[in-house]
Length: 342
Image (cartoon, rainbow, N blue to C red; front, side, top):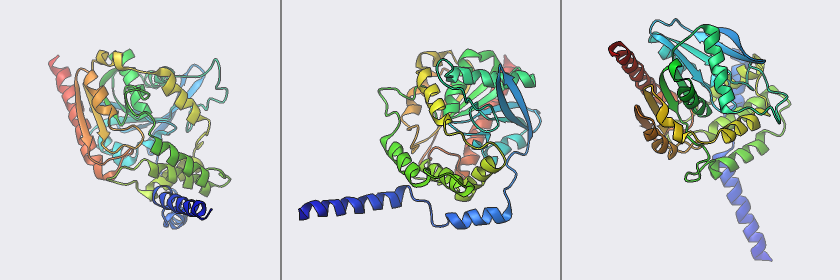
């Protein structure tokens, strides 16, 4: 019996150590929240906000800058609003002369929340791709550059395949051609169990704004790699903005976007149809869409360049932003030259 209790004690110590080192929020969290509340929430949507209709689905988007060199539309990841693309990532593109469109996918932010979701109305990535086309049609944009992050990269691939005439270039960031490829890992067990622990610790009671932003920070920290970390204050500011100034986060969207990814399946056999120059960016320590995805799907795209960042996770660290932006600008400049020559 004594050995049984010793094993329980060791297991408890091990669990405490794991939780402390993997999912607990940093000690500075409460002071950061107080600091943000004292300073006020900064403006995180500096551009012009508008709405496009795709049938009965309303899509919220923001336009930044003038299209001196062209227009870029950015598509977000699973459950993310347009704020998933931070200022330090998209503003250098605006300053370089490009108009940048950020948008809320259906189910998040100020776009339509799909409250009647269910058979036969479950939507797919293909449906979400038509939301992007609706935004471009609303703005009268015939040809643009396309950037997709995570699930947004999957939608971007679908757009480049099915609406090839609308896109001048494609940048796929931290994404895959088939998330549930049986030859690859799929959803990493470590990330899954960390997500479960975070939900148990911070997600059971979301009765106050502070508790909601703490959950957002806890999830954000799960996306770190071994290299650059998330900026805790910036993640909290973003969460405060989304919950206090916008519609926030709909819990049901997690299942909806997950279903869309699963239902849409593989694009492997179609990636060869992508005509525009393509850039694949991926961190080698991505905990959600593992790095092994990138070297598998990238060679399936005809005119592709890869750029892999050592130790980067599944986010946009300031430390790596300049090199990511530089790679994207090289792609856009290459596209411009090819169009002039053609």
